[in-house]
Length: 341
Image (cartoon, rainbow, N blue to C red; front, side, top):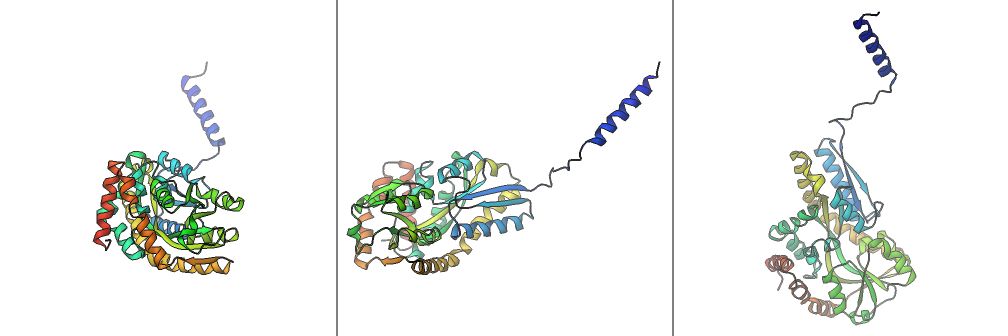
C-alpha cells in the first residue's frame, strides 16, 4: 500500500501539470483603465470638437486611468436611445441639445427661449452661476449627471423653398426638437411643428415629409442638408447650447479624484471653445454657400416682430409646471442682469 504522503504528492504533481498546460491569462485588475463611452448624433462639428478636447483633457489629467471613446453620428443609436443608455449606465456620456431631455425633466427646455438677438448677452445669461448651477443639478434623480453646457450657435431654418419674410413661414411643416417651448414658438409663427430625432431629418427633407428644420448652421452644413434643401433662413430663432450629461450610476462609482477631473474639465473645455465655435460657425456659412446653398438673412423689422411674437411663450408654457416655472424665473432673472428688458 502506498504511503498517504506519496498519494498527496502525486496529486499535487498532477494538479501542477494541469495548471502548466493552461493558457496564461494576464491579470487586468487595477491597472486596466476605466472606459468612458460618449455618444452624440453630431459629426465633424462643434460637438465632436468639444468631445475630442474633453477626451484629451480627461485622459491627460487622469494619467490614462480613464479611456474616453467617442461615437459620433448616432453610431450608438438614436438620441432617445442614447439618453436612455446613459441613464442606465450602458454608455457613460451623451452630448446634445438639452431639450431632448425635456421628457425626463421639463425644466431642461427653458434654454430654448429666444431672449437676445446677439450671442454675448445670451451666453452671459446661460453661464451665470445663479442659473447654470441649478440647471446642471437637474437629472440626478433620473440617472443623469450633467457637467457642462457648450455654445452651439444661432438656430435658423433650413428650408426646401426660399422665403422673403417671416410671414412666408405660415403653413410650413418644420422639424423641431421635442419640447413644448419650441413647438409653441413655431405655432405662433403659423408653422406646424414636427418633432423628430436628428437621424430622421435628412430622409424627411428628401421625401418632402417636412418643409424645413430648426437647426444651427454648423449642424446643417456638416450633415450636408444643402444637398436637398438649399435655403438657410438666418432668423436667430434662438441661441442654442449643448449639454454634456454623464451616467449618474457610472459616475458615482468612480474614485473622488476622477469625479473631480470629469466635473472640472467639462466646463473648462466649454468656456475655452467659445471663440473656436464662433469662427467655426462663420466658416460653415461660407461652406454652405460654396456647396450650393443660399443664406437668407432675416430683416430687422422681422427680427423685432419675431421676438415680440414669441416673448409670452416662456411664461405661458412654464406656468403649467411649478418646478419648470421656478427654473424659468431663474433664467429670466439672469437675463435681466445681462441686459434683457
